[in-house]
Amino acid sequence: MSDEATTTTEATETATVERDASPVESVAKLEEAIRKERENTKNYKALQREADELRKFKAEQEQAKLTEGERVSAREKAAADKEQQLTQRERTMAVRDGLAAAASAEKLTLAASTATVIRLLNLDDVDFDNDGAPKNLAAMLRQLAKDEPALFDLRKRTGSADAGARDEGHTVVGTGFNRMKAAYAATERRR
Image (cartoon, rainbow, N blue to C red):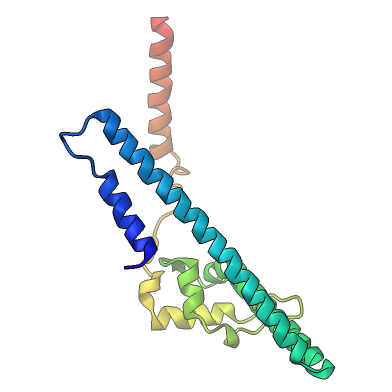
């Protein structure tokens, strides 16, 4: 068994308090277990720092072996990779930002999370205009709704969002307002 696993087992055994032990002994055992865990954490952090230093040293040694042309080529490749990552992130963000507008334009309501829909869209198929905004996202969502209807709430909506409050009699809102008005008047009379 490794030292870390042994120490963890010892800490668990130490932390298990016997029923016959006095509270003072139990506290002392728990404090000892906490002290051992802290030492293990310090040792782990020191080993992590040492491993990071070794990785850095190895990278420096590999760089020293390269010729000047190879170093320039490696830097250019790293810069190109970084640029590609940033471009991909910017494209994903543009799609995420345009998703709600495209769904609204197609009269679709997302039932799944935006992240799920983005994962299912092939971002390589999204066309972008000169400003970086997606152009064909609405069409892609329409196709996704056909392919994966469970991602969208496809029920037909009838009525309005205000539940008829704009009707002549203000049935829904009016009734609630009248009850609030009556309750307020009753409170005022009690004072």
